[in-house]
Amino acid sequence: MTILLTSFSESESEIRAIRNAVFEDEQHVPPEIDWDGHDGECLHALVLGDNGEAVGTGRLAPDGKIGRLAVLRFQRGRGFGASLLRALVEAARNQGLTKVFLHAQTRALKFYQQADFQVSGEPFHEAEIEHFYMSRSLCD
Ligand SMILES: CC(C)(COP(=O)(O)OP(=O)(O)OC[C@H]1O[C@@H](n2cnc3c(N)ncnc32)[C@H](O)[C@@H]1OP(=O)(O)O)[C@@H](O)C(=O)NCCC(=O)NCCS
Image 1 (tube, protein in one colour):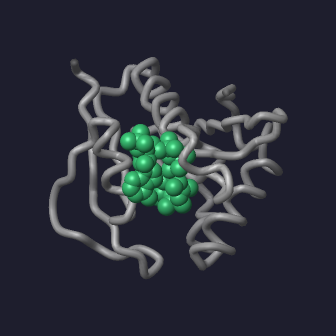
Image 2 (spheres, helix red, strand yellow):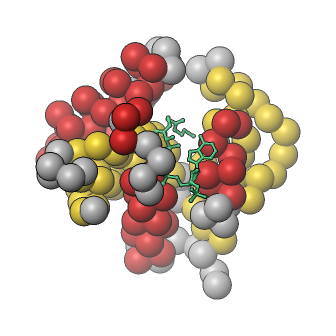
C-alpha cells in the first residue's frame, strides 16, 4: 500500500471524488460543511489501492486537527484507514506539533482508540452526526 502526502491543489480531483462518495453520497453531509474552505491550508494524505488508484484520504490542519478521513466503502477493513491516520500523525510529529486532535464520529471511536487517541468531554453534533473530541499527545 502506498501513502502520498500531498496538497489540495496537487490532488484536488482525487480528494473530491473520495469525499463526495463517502461524506456527501453515503453519509449525507451537506457539501458546504465538508468543503469548508480550509483544505488549501492543510496537508493531505492519499492512500493508493491495488491498481494505484486513490481509495482513501485525510487531512492535517496547521493546528494539529486531523479530519476528513475517508476510505471508499468497498475498500474498508483492509488497513487503509489506519495507515492514513498513522501517516498524518507522523506528519504532525515531523512538523514539531506536540498534540493531534480530531472530532470522531461515535461509530469510529474504536478505530481512533486503536491508534492511541483518547476521548474527552461530552458528545456533540456536527452535520447532525454525533461526535466526540479525541486527542493524542506526541510528547512520548
Ligand atoms: C473510519 C474509516 C476511515 C476506517 O477506514 P478502514 O480502512 O476501514 O479502517 P482499517 O481497515 O484501517 O481499520 C482499522 C481498525 O479499526 C477498525 N474499524 C474501522 N472502522 C471502524 C468503525 N467504523 N467502527 C469500529 N471499528 C472500526 C477495524 O475493524 C480495524 O480493526 P482491526 O485492526 O482490529 O481489524 C472508514 O470506515 C470510513 O471511511 N468511514 C466513513 C467515513 C467516516 O466515518 N470517517 C471518520 C469520520 S470521524
